[in-house]
Length: 117
Image 1 (tube, rainbow, N blue to C red):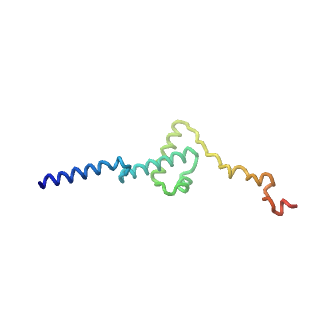
Image 2: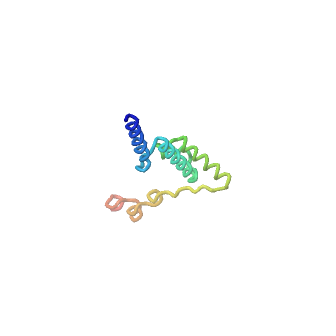
Image 3: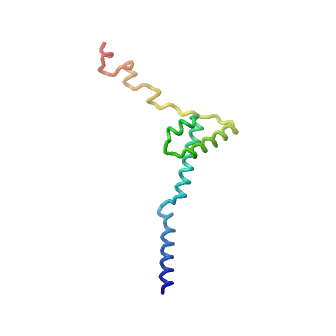
């Protein structure tokens, strides 16, 4: 009787633990691997966008610096070996072009003293 209860408990525990993957519950190992992969992807993207590693660290402070650097270094090596030219990101529209009100009024906001004169 004792072995039957113990066996039942072990089988029940094993089946519950096996269902964790089906529920989407990640283990510590899976979380660590995911963070590592994300850090490498961030570093690779920064290098391909011709951004310095320091800029990359500053832009993504929550990413692991070791993973970001590893991705940046791997992409740098790949780009050098295959003569790949980096693709700098385009400036955002707010940085490149003046606002609609500024373009029409020569930089002065509607109703300001510069526009009234």
